[in-house]
Structure formats: C-alpha cells, structure tokens
Length: 239
Ligand code: CA
Image (cartoon, rainbow, N blue to C red; front, side):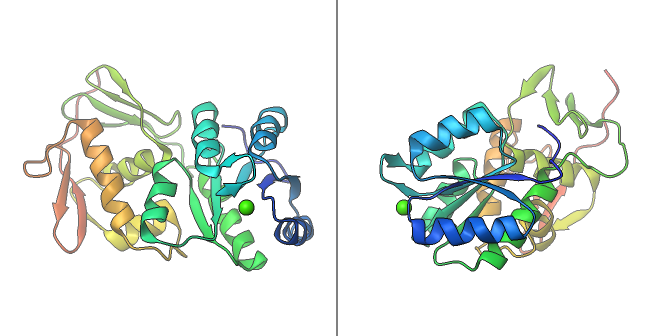
C-alpha cells in the first residue's frame, strides 16, 4: 500500500454529472486531486493508470454494476473504496462491505460529510500504526505482524481482508480484555458509522472461519454476550 500523497488523489466513479461535478469541485477545495469517470470501464482503466489513494464508486453505472468494479479493484489492490448508492437497505450495506468496500455513502449526500469520511478512511488505511510494534503471537502458531500486515497460522499465510486484519489486531492487542462492540466499530470502521453492528458480527464470523475457530468453544475469539469480544488465546512462543 502506498503512503498517502500530500494531495490525495480521489477517483470519483459517478455517471450523474450533477453529482460528480460539484463533488469534484468540493474535493478540490478540500485539498484533494479529483479524477472523474462515469463508467465501469473508465474506473478500472484509471485505477490502473493513476493509482488513486481512494475510489468513490457509484453502484449503478451505465456500462456495469459498481459491485463488479469493486470486486475487480479489490482483487488488484488494497485501495480504499467508498461505495456510493441510492439504495440504503441493510442488505446493501453488508453486500457493499462483503465486496471489500471500506465505507458506504447513501445518496443524496453532503459533500462536507463525505469528505470527512474520506479523510477518516485515508487515515485508517495509512500505514501509521503509531509506535513500531513487533509481531503479536498466540498459541496455535498464530502470528500477526502489524507492520507487514500479515497473519500466519500454523505456518500458513492467512488471506484476511483489511477489516478482518484490523479486528484481529485490535483484539490481540487487548488480549484477555473485553473489547466492546462500540469500540471495535469506532476503531475499525468509523466513529460516524451509522449502520447496525450486524456488520461486525458478519466480519467476526468470517475471521473465525479463517482462523478455524469455533464460536461455541473458542480458541481465539470469545463472544461476551451483549458486550463485545475477547481474545482468549495465551501468548505463543516465537517459532
Ligand atoms: Ca449512477
């Protein structure tokens, strides 16, 4: 993942000019470099040729479905993706996140609000991680390296999404403590998150599956009913 440029480049994929143009102007005034395209084809081409720092992606494009574009982009890179949509149902929210999108904005939106969310997404995706930290280890050969953003389980690399990684890192950093649902939502998603925390359960479920963990008899992630989650595995040995 590239470091965020001084003038972050935002690829806006939106075919409605009445939305795209004023929004691009607001981005420019806020210190971003907007790039515009109104097609799925243009989105993939520009994402490849310009390496944007973030992609705002409309769900309904004239030549394709934004979800397919999202999937394609995610396959190629870690670029943060914010989905733009007129549909606001819960299912769509989860579907959007399941595709690897980082956030979700329902139209009509206020440029100021979206820009503050773009800033939040860029901050989270920037490889800051504050103090340098060594790998976090746990029994069973689990090793998470915050700097390299890699997770190894019993000698095998685990392919975690960014959210899954951030969740696991957050839980491992607080080994033995309950991390509340609210804290996880605000640290891994956004303090402005307006969806339900069902998204959190969905991601915890995926994470457990990848860890081979059993919610009923957890080795790693215990559910503390009505409160949050706790990382329960003791510290592991250095291999
Ligand atoms: Ca559209």
